[in-house]
Amino acid sequence: QVQLVESGGGLVQPGGSLRLSCVASGPAFNTYTMGWFRQAPGKERELVAANHGWGGSPYYGDYVKGRFLISRDNARNTVYLQMTSLKPEDTAVYYCAASRGGLKIGYEYWGQGTQVTVAS
Image 1: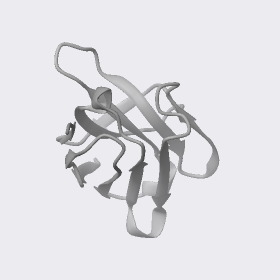
Image 2: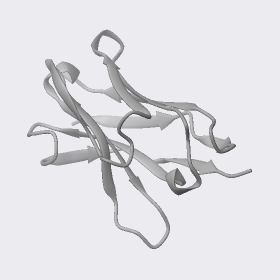
Image 3: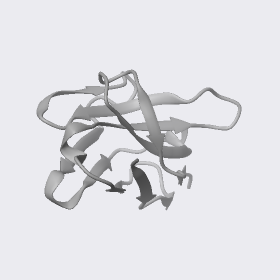
């Protein structure tokens, strides 16, 4: 069983930056693929970024490539999402999730979410 707790959301102006953190409790964090998802009001949840515990190439949604960076510190059981050049359309609840599968599938553990609002 893995429990995930996100933090770091908030209100930011367009063009600004935020860093989200997700701390995992439970064993073998480095064996999980970790992903960041987001869901805006009235829209489906979408995968923003993901990376394997062992490294390798991460996944990024086309709409965040070049602006967001996913990273992790396995020693601290933490995964981060550094968000830059934020746009109003990035406004959503952001969730971290853990998978034993690939970058895009098999997410079975979810955090409670953190709100990100991009507005002037």
